[in-house]
View 1: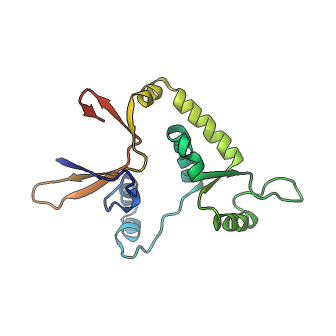
View 2: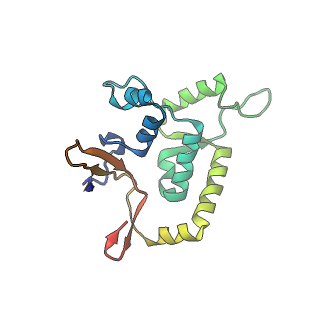
View 3: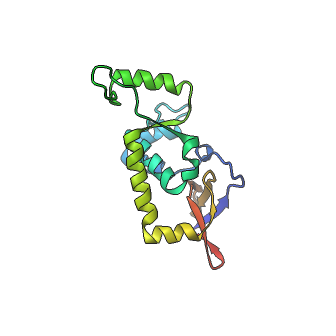
Length: 178
C-alpha cells in the first residue's frame, strides 16, 4: 500500500525530488529508452524540451490558479517586428530565435506572446467561472505552489517505489485534507 511523507519545506524544488512523476511515467510508457536517457542515465543523455503547447499550458495554469505569481514567471511581448511587413516574426523564424536568445540572456522569465496571453486569459476566466471549480477554489484552505509531496508505494518483498506530486491546493473536508 501507500505510505505518505510530506516534504517539510514550502520552498521545495519539485524538480529536485528524486521520485517518479506523472510526466516521467508517461515517458516510460511511451519509450523506455527515452525514460532511461532522461531520468536514469548519470548524467542524463537526453534533455526534455518544452514545446509551445507545454509553455502555453503552463501559462494558462498559472493564470487560472496562481494569477498573483504570473508576472514573476512570465513576460508578455509581441516579439520582434518585421520592418517590411510591420508584423511580428513567427516563432519558427531565425530572426525570432535570435531575438529571443538575446532577451533571455537578460530576463529569466518565460516569454508569452501577446496573442497567447489573450487566449490564456480567456481560458483562465472560463476555468474560474465554472461552478465546481469556483467552489473548490473558495474551499481551498492552503495554496502550496512550490511544495512537493512524496508518496512511497510499498509491495511486500519488493523495493519501494517513490512517487511525487505537486497539488495546486489543499481542501479540508471534515477532518481530512484532500
